[in-house]
Length: 234
Image (cartoon, rainbow, N blue to C red; front, side, top):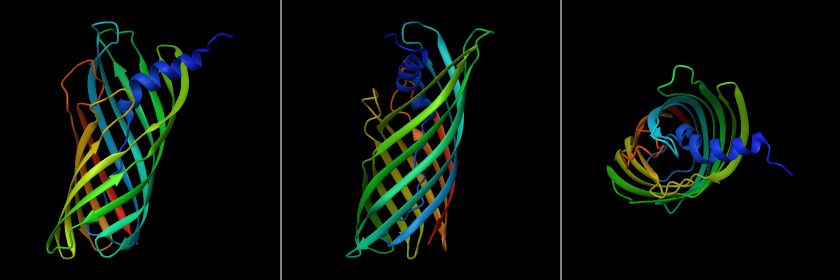
């Protein structure tokens, strides 16, 4: 039995290259405080970067943008422990170019992810620290058009992270987070991002960006990735 073009596209495009280019990460709407609540949010995410081909010296440049929705439900235990789950979904589109006038590559990816979460915090005021662990699964699929050829595919992977949180205020009005995703497919170094969440009553406004860990042009981790989100607590 032969291998279809769709399967080849799934392996070569989505598993090797374009998942790291189009990944969206949870925008942080939470506080460093442990709480019993539900949180919903929507964020816009944009990224860009460059990489060299797997068996060539050609440099590719890509840009992508996506819209992501997040939901979380958590319980508070003993005022310094929080546990629950979070889930997210996004749709992203990307475009890639290289130094050839007739090269045309673009596509779209749909992403679903879910994680149990646990957080422990210091019961201190008005400044507190928190440590969050969120191991999870990632489901994604999409379509890619390279020149006149289409490829369709999807996979199951991992989107897990560990966060260090700093909260300021009573009630907390500012939360700074450092988040590390330890592994994503063949990226053994993982990637990191930082976030800043400002809270007012039941609303949270979030800013975030990736921190590239490598300048190796053969890697496709985005050189820039920005997050802008709005969350509601209830």
